[in-house]
Length: 136
Image (tube, rainbow, N blue to C red):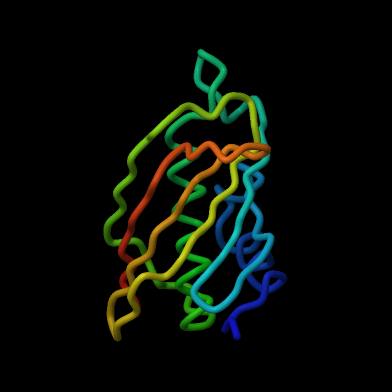
C-alpha cells in the first residue's frame, strides 16, 4: 500500500509545487513504488515548432519521481532531486504526456527511480528518465 494517496499528493502538489500546478500536472494513480501522472497539452508548453518543450518534460518526470519516492516514504517534503538524466527519444506533438514512474531502489538516504514519458493516445515513448532523490 502506498504511503501517500493520489488526493494527498495532488494537494501537496497544489500547496508546495506551484510550477507543477502551472503546467497542469496531476497524479492519476499512485501505488507503493509506482505512479502515473499526466501533463495536459497547453500552448505554454511548446517550443516554436509546436512540440512540448524539454523543460516541461523534465518537470513532469521530476514530479512523477517525487510521487514515487513519497509513495514509499510518506510525506517528506524535503526529499529532493540529487541527479536527473533524461534521454529525449521523439517529439511530443500537441498532446498530453503521461508519466509512468517506478522506484528502482530505496535506501536510507537515497532513492532511485525511472520514468517513461509517453505521448497520450499512443504507445510512443517520448523520453526515458532516471533520477536519484536524497531522502532527509
